[in-house]
Amino acid sequence: GDSVTQMEGPVTLSEEAFLTINCTYTATGYPSLFWYVQYPGEGLQLLLKATKADDKGSNKGFEATYRKETTSFHLEKGSVQVSDSAVYFCGLNAGNMLTFGGGTRLMVKP
Amino acid sequence: NAGVTQTPKFQVLKTGQSMTLQCAQDMNHEYMSWYRQDPGMGLRLIHYSVGAGITDQGEVPNGYNVSRSTTEDFPLRLLSAAPSQTSVYFCASSYSSTPQRGQFFGPGTRLTVL
Image (cartoon, each protein chain N blue to C red):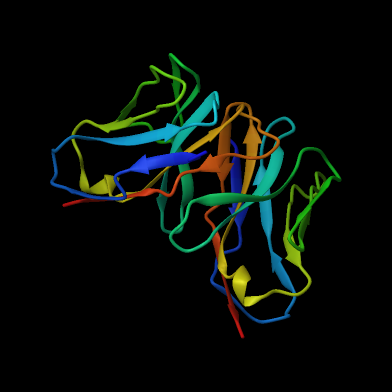
């Protein structure tokens, strides 16, 4: 079946540091890929998505590129802020089901 | 719009008790789903529905029942609660199963089974 693997956290960075959270997937067919973010005490919110190979999703300074050859969708941000502290989930959407990775907690220190 | 609402926010049950987690959305979304979130395991799909009267199983359906009598509501029933069902439960909705704008999630229900 489909699966998503993302790096375990927590990831701790200083403000303005560069962020990478790795995500790889296994799926049949051509899934859509996405990143969701969960702030403390809240539900998940869509951060960005890509629907086909080589597409780049971007939002709020975050970006990720759909790499079919490496089955990856790594999340990057050039300069993180304290307000980016949250749990980030990578996932894929194939057919009627969405599959999430285990989540990566990001902590940004001032 | 209230978006996706869930009740209750917190619940403690004893083993063997039954209860229903409520989920409602006011966005006229066809697709609704239930997930459970456990530490280190991300979100796992329990059941989903592509429209009123249609439901299907997700990755971890055992011990849970759902029904979809209206577009707005998608309750999740625990028939006989077990400690393994201690988790945070999220309901989500979207226009379709492959939404361009992603799914809208409710605030969650934290369930503890003693």
